[in-house]
Length: 346
Image 1: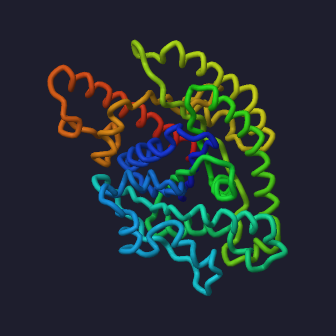
Image 2: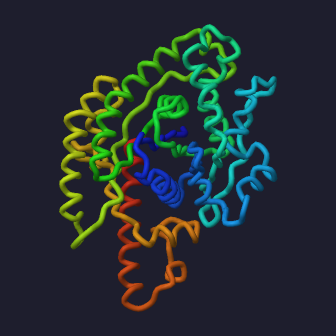
Image 3: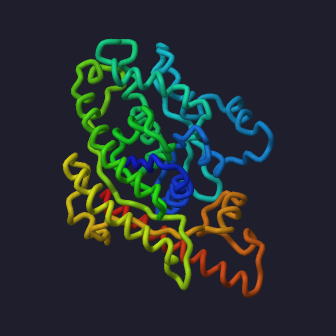
């Protein structure tokens, strides 16, 4: 059965996209079929897979590949056309069998208002009733077409209606964060927002209009996988002192604020699931230090950091030895995270 995982934080700049890409590749490397969905109008995930270096490359891709992006695939629902949604022909990721991309579209944000209205008025306005369930329906039929084990959804920062919909209708979610004051504040915000979204979702699933829609709104059953702390610098193999204090603040915010809020909203897995997957009470899914210059090599080679070769980084001798050790460390980090996710979602 396909598991849909949303990567979400209303704070930007926490490396959601790079995590989604690297994790998707690792899960595929471990034998799973994985579809990555670019639900961020900035289309950074799409840019990590497709070669967009030429001017107007994205527009060219759209024109030459109609319906092979999230916005256009949803168009029959949002334009109220008498045509059912169809599975998306995803883009196979070069170099990794079993990994696919459902490309994003810069115009997806244009559907934000329509969806927001639909999610408030769908019971009284019949023309809008198909919109709230359309995203998850599209993901499900596309996953079935590819026999996918995982659908990883890369979300934009923000608290708009599209993110509300995609988080609420996912099976699981993870929160990427950085060790800084803004991520601590974001966790406090999510502790308030996520229960409110779930209350809306559970109510929406009980509405007759949405249950009878062409794309029924699914009954939410969302569960938290954990927090991914990333984008910090190391010294002697450990986070520098400046970052360590924020690690403590993040842990405190999770245990004192986020976990109680998620518990009340029934958004946590049974406690033994986290223990069996090796997570501590802080529910830290992974710690990922800064990629530094390797991120540029990764983007240029369009492959994950842990798969970079000496040819990709163009370094020799002692410098290559140091970089190779870093690459090996990132491989271990993402392999451990993939294994934890396998256990948590089993």
